[in-house]
Length: 413
Image 1 (cartoon, helix red, strand yellow):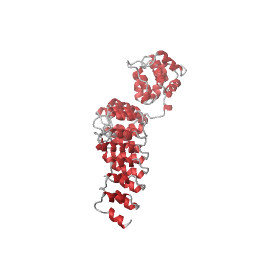
Image 2 (cartoon, helix red, strand yellow):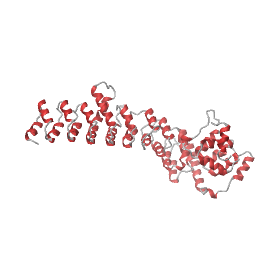
Image 3 (cartoon, rainbow, N blue to C red):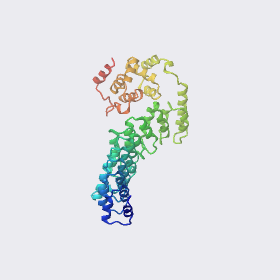
C-alpha cells in the first residue's frame, strides 16, 4: 500500500475528486478500505460494485450505505461469497418493502430480494429464508417462492415459521410438488388449522402425520383422531403422540387398547380427562389382547360356527363391525366368505387387491351397506385414505349393480 494512498484513504473526510482517485487506485487494499467507508457518494459505491476484485465487491455488498442500484447489481454477482454477504444485509430491509412499493428504493430492494430468492446457490436462498422466516411484513411473493423451493433447508424454515403464509398458500403447497420434508415442516407450525391438518392427513405421509399428532397446538377433528387411532395399529411412531393428544375420545382410547404396548398404558392411565370406566375397559381389553395373543394358524377355523349363525339370522353387520374393531381378521374374512357365499381365498384375493371398487362389490354381494364397504377398505385392506371409495351422497353404493357384478367377475365370481 503506497504511503500517499494510505494517508488519503484514512482521512476523516474526502472530496469527490479524492474518492474518484482512490476508487481507481491500483492497490487492492486501498480500494478495499475505501469500500468500507460510509461517507462515499452513491456513484462511487456503484463504481466499486463493478470492481474486478471480489474482495472489493464483497465489502460494498456489506456496506449499509451502498445504493439499491448497486445492491441489485451485486445480487447477480458471479461470486457466491458476494451474494451471501449481500443476502445478510438486504434481508433485514424486507419489512420496508411490503406495503407501498411505489418508492424507487423500495422497488429496487424488492427486486434484489427477488433475484436472491432465485439464486442458484442453495446457501444464498437458505440465508434469505432464515432471515425472513418470522418477519411479519416480509414480501408475500418472496415468502411463497421460498416456501416452494425444492431444498428443505430453504423451504423448511418458511413453511414452519412464516406468519405470512395463509392456509390457501399451504394447501397449494401440500397438493402440489414439494420437497421431501415439507409436510413435516407444515405439521410443526404453531396453531395448524383443522383444514391444514385434514390436508396433511389426506396425504397419508406417516412421518408428517406423526409430527402433526405431536404438535399440541395443531387442531385435529375428533372423528379424524378416531380414524387415526384405527389406522395406527401398524404405525408405532403414532402411538405415543396419539396418547398425548388433548381431548382424546374414549372411542379412540378403546381402539388403541388393541395394539398399545404395555409401557404406554401407564401414559394413558395417567390422563385425567378419560372417564374411569374407559380406563377400566382399556385395562380389560389390553389384558384380553395379551392373553389371547397367539398365531392365527393356532386359532380354530370359525367357518362352521359362522354358517350356523347365518342360518339363525344372527350373522349381521354389527358383528362384523365388532370383529373389525377388535382386529379379529380371521373372523372378519370368514364372515365375509359366509355372507357373500364365496371361498375365503377369494375374499383374501379381493382384499389384497386394494381395489376400492372390488371391495365395494364384495360388501354388496355380502348384503352389507356401502358404509361397511368403505370400512372394509380402511380397516381390512388398510388402503391409504385418499384411495378410499366412499358411498354416494345418499348413502348408497357409488356403482350400479352391473358395475358391481362386473368387478366381482374380475375375481372369478
